[in-house]
Length: 158
Image (cartoon, rainbow, N blue to C red; front, side, top):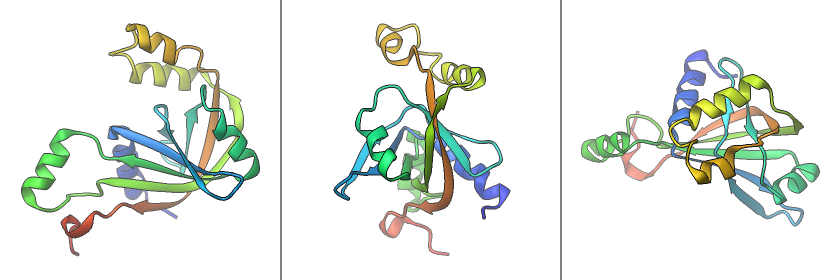
């Protein structure tokens, strides 16, 4: 499916992403996109999960159709400045993960700790307390395909 090296590169990109969103299919067949700030990937297997607290449409859509696409956009000013300076990207500026979402399940203590560590710098702020406490359920995703996002002529020609 994916080599260990490919998977580690995808994990690095997702971990450093400054924006991650999930697309689902609405009952009428049209797409629905939601931001997700709690997405994580498994260290070695092509699967991941997100903590799910607020969405109202997402669970309904997934009841009817479990297909999802996750898009993670490369984070870091350094990546973008270096790429613009060179005139090409050293790696994909974003990636789409195509997969299937599972049912809601309880969050594990380890997942809760991992997420709280991720938001450590801002978790003492008032807004963070409103947003990120009480994260009790998660949703797993099985990754079936990885699609690098290519942006025009800056993509390296190999």
